[in-house]
Length: 340
Length: 266
Image (cartoon, rainbow over the protein chains, first blue to last red):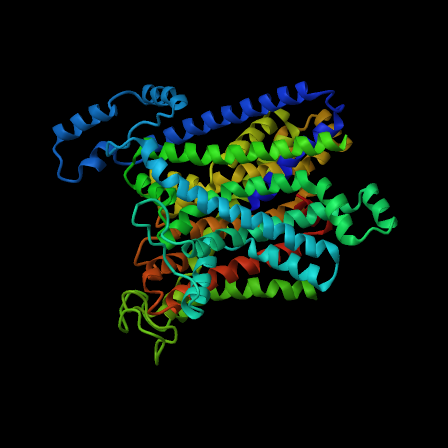
C-alpha cells in the first residue's frame, strides 16, 4: 500500500514537469509524446519479462519432472525436456518465446496446453472480478471523498478520513473472512463460495461475485478515498475555486464543476496504481472464494515450475496494468490540454 | 497526551504478541478437543481443524509475524536511507531507481514475493524477508530521495562536497541527520506494508510451515471449517487487522507536520 503512496506521487510528477514546459501547440506533439510514453512502458514490460524468466530459472525442480510425476525414469525426463525445449540455453528459449508474443503465441505449458488457451479460459474471470472491484472502488472513493470535502473538518470528514486510512492497511483475506462471517454466516445474505457455472467459465450466479469484489475493493476504497480527498483539498485552494465560492455558487456545484475537473489527473493516477494491487489481491481472494480466475492458475503454475504459464500470467496482468496506466496518462493529458 | 494515547494500541498488541507464547494454556500442536469444536470450557475460542486450542495458537502465532515484519521494515528503512540519499546526491543512481520503481508498478508485489520465495529453496524466513525488502525498496528509496533532494541541493552540502567530503560522509553526516522525521514515518509505513506482505505470503503458504502457529496460516487452514467454528478463522483475521490498524495509527501520529503533509499529499 505504501508503494502506491509513493508511486502516486511519482506518477504525479510528470504532470508537474509538463506544467513547467510551454503548453503543446497542437495534437501532433501530444501524440508524439504519447508514443514515447508507450514505447517506454513497453520496454519496461520486456525488462520485467527478462526478470521473471531469470527468477523462474532459479526455481528448484524443473517443468519436465513436475509434469511427469515422481516415478519417471531419467530417459523419460530427458525426452520430455527435449520436447519442451528445456535443453536449450535460457536465452534461446526466451528469444523464441518473445518472438511468438506479437502473434499472441505465449508458448505451451509444461502439461502441453497452449498458454493462451489457459489464460483465455481464466483471465476473463479475473478481469471481471478486478474490473468490478475497480469500478466499485472508484465510485465509492469519489462519493466518500466528495461527501467529506463538502464539509471540511466536520465530524463526517474526520470519520471518513480516519476510517479510510485505517481500512487501507488491511490485507484482503482479513476483510474477506470478516465479510464471510457477517454477510454469509450471520446475515445469510450471500453465498460464501463460488460455484462455477455448468457450461464452464464464470461463476454460476451474480451473487457469488459480491463478496470477492467487496473483499478486493474495501482496502482499495480506503486507499483511493484518501487520494481523492487530498486531491480535492489541493484543488480547493485554486483561485478559480475561490472565485466560484465568492460568486455564491452552491457547494455541490462548485465541487462537481470547478474542483473535480482540476483534481482529475491526480485521482486518475491514484486509481491507476490500485490496479496492480487489485490483480495481486485477486490471487488471494480467488483462493478464499474458490473463484475460477487466473490467481488459482498462477498458484498452480508456480508449484509446477511452469515458466511459460507464469510468464503468461505476468504478461496478462502487466498488460492490464499498462492499459490502465496509459488510460490515466490520457486522462491527465486531456485534463491539462483542456485547462491550458 | 493524545499522541501517547494513539500509540497505546500498537504497544499493547505488540506486547501481547511478544509475550503471548508464554501465556498459551495448551500446547500449540496437540489436540485438546474435537476438530472445529465450538467454544466451551477450557477452550474459550473453540478448536481448529485438528482439534487444537485456537486461543493457544492465537497467543503463540503473533510473535514471528511481528518480528519478521519489524525486520523487513528496519531493513527497508536503513537501505532506503542510504540509497535514497545517495540517489539524491548522484543523479545517475536516482534515474536507475526511478526505472526500477516504474518496473515494480507492473508486477504485483504478491507475485514478486511468490517468485522469490519459491525460487530460493530452503530459504524460509530469510527468503521471505529478502523478497519483501526487494519488492518495497525501490519505492522507499524514491520516497527518501524525494525528501533528500532539497537538502542535497542546498548550499551547505555543496560546500561540504567542495571541502572534500566523500559520498558516505555526505550521506551520513550532512544529509541523513536532517531526514530523521521522514525516516521515522517511513519505518511506520513500511511496517504496515510488511505486515501485509508477510501475512499474505503466509496465507498463500509460502511462509511458515505447518504445524507452526501463525495468524495468517490459521486463517488459511481453518477456512474450510468456517461454518463449524467461525472463531478459528475470524479471531486470527481480527488479530492481523488490529495489528495493521494500530501500527498505521501510530505511524500517523509519529509523522511530524511536514512529513505528514508529504505523505497525505502524495
